[in-house]
Length: 473
Image 1 (cartoon, one colour):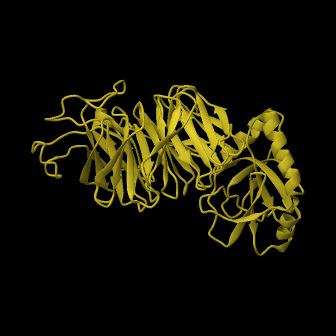
Image 2: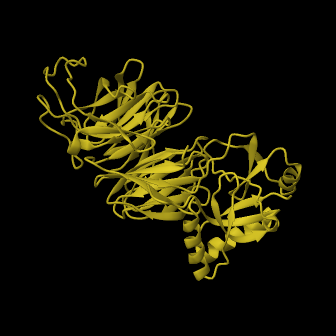
Image 3: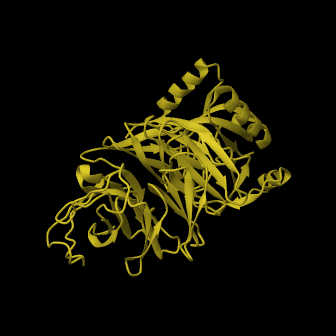
């Protein structure tokens, strides 16, 4: 572990290595993480939330014993690429780039296209026993795996055979094969379970598959090399990573309008924060990942990684991002999110600034009403700012602009000195409940004034900050 900032920037807190080549990393949201290590390691490695290795599972399977009697009664090897947990977190479905053993003689490849290449298999893995329970035959070079929100269908993009395998999770059999075009990759399914979007990476299109009749239409001209897709919860915005032109795309599905954001070279996988305020994308060639504001669609931070970051997922309970680097390491970063106690609280949003409002404080309610701020229920995984009472009377009834927060006082002092050297009047205040050392760069008497100050600080110094309220005594 590293001493790290917990606010104002993203910092590295842990690295996991040792005999892995992770092509992707996923979590079940219940403290289990899985890395798919391709044919270079022939393993899926499972970790707990602390980064401890739980199991290195070999991709070995006897296809005949799993119900495919046309294959020999021997052990076959796979090549784990991508994966998706079921909604209840009990099972992990893994795609295998190819299978190795008797009967597999014409392996597909990234540069191949056609129907005459070997098929492959998906594995269903129990996330408690870490055993391969069943397998499903699919197309050639299967990659991205997605499960419909109702848990009935599984979809996998078959890269070389240019189609999508649609599988019933009840029968665990392929029920439909849908041709979509060259090199399909990312898949996103709407929450009505009626429409699936598929990134056709060998084109500038996104396929739309109607899941009621399996008819295909296209969103044309999005940009070359669409690789990964994310739908927001309301099904109003589709986010696209455009690998070939180094951009992200935000499509408003209500009116078709498009907004682009330039990113570093080789945008691959994305993940969206639980509150949907932020999008994180790994950039394979630039050895970075970037944090993007989903509302303004602008870059907030750029973070260096190890070589070839290719997968990313989030542990929103701890505000951590897990980045899979193909060179052989998983890096865990902490973003500027803080866990708050489970009291009855509400969060008001002031132009994207979270300010915690305790229900029992009527003077704060009045302030929120005066500013016409809509109150929303506090999501468990949203950005949370803890309102504290300070011991020092001089800091009471103020809104502080915080640039950093540290567990260790020496780290706070070092950061304060850095800011002072830059001509920023930084002071340190203490949060009494969690004892964090907060580096304050300005104080204001109102949320509105603090909001303006935050904008000025971002414009002048190019850095993020957040508002910390010290209640009136």
